[in-house]
Amino acid sequence: MTEVPRTLEVEDLNVVFKGRRGLPTVHAVRDVSFHIGKGETLGLVGESGSGKSTTARGLMRLVEPASGSVRLNGRDLTRMSRGELRRARRDIQMVFQDPYSSLNPSRVIGLSIGEPLEVHEDLTASDRNERVRELLRKVKLSPDFYERYPYEFSGGQRQRIAIARAIAVNPSLVVCDEAVSALDVSTQNEIINLLEDLREELGTSYLFIAHDLAVVRHISNRIAVMYLGRLLEEGPAERVFTQPAHPYTQALLAAVPSPDPSQRLVDRAALFTGELPDPSDPPSGCPFRTRCRHVMEVCAQSMPEATPVDGGGAVRCHLQSSGPALAGRSLVDLGESTVNLEPGH
Ligand code: SF4
Image (cartoon, rainbow, N blue to C red):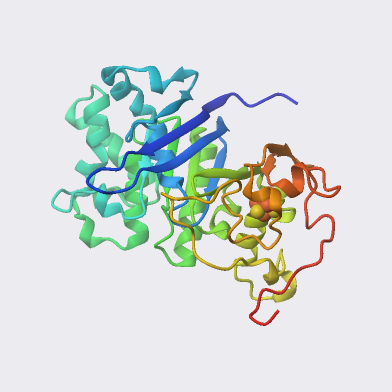
């Protein structure tokens, strides 16, 4: 099988926010590694506070990583001067949850979409104007909307405008940070379909960040699951959904609502309890141990090594690396019985 060329390769990325004025130091991203092939989508999931957005900001050097490397089309962003980085950033664009943060409310949307073209491409005003109209067509909006203001659009339309702006300079990678989280389900589907069409047409790669696993399922080729700054599981989307290997991934899947309980991928008893621990004072060993129903003594002593999983990808859990005869196989695959976490059990 020929391997897809890699658009992005992140290796051992660490981001540390140093404590100031009495605030504690937070190691927000720890030893995170992943890659995204050309025209592929990596879904990065985890609860709010797990370090997903900080990973995205770190790889773009919007926050300076403490260590690690980030190669975009083979060039290491962490070794670039400020000037080189500014030019390289043309190749990574972002779409945020709230398009108001990137669209100037007092500018007509045509001018906002054209901004990256103004910065990165030497075009006449009329060529730029024509390109913006083309971009509006690409995101399935009327070119006549050029002269309108952001407040005149619905949330879904504003997200289409933000996408038009993001793809204006044909980037290799678009980072979608909770880009559909604020939309209703049918608008979410429309935006995801649009992103898929654009990926097909332009060969763009996506890093698709969401707290909801259900949202990333259809768009992602691979899924990476983060918790307290660590990647706990990574693998092909189909494998992660049908045979989640990490107790945390199982718990996230169990939380996905399903109209038909018999169709639920993982039993609700896999749900965890309690809150995300304080990121400035994470548990020793496995970061998930304070909420894990399988916790063992060894879990407090050391962080599990990444272990390959049948079906592709890897998981960090002592049950998989040194547990009783699991040897990298999914707990679901093994038909493991579930434990009731309701009070009184
Ligand atoms: Fe649970 Fe231990 Fe695996 Fe962590 S390492 S997920 S605490 S079993």
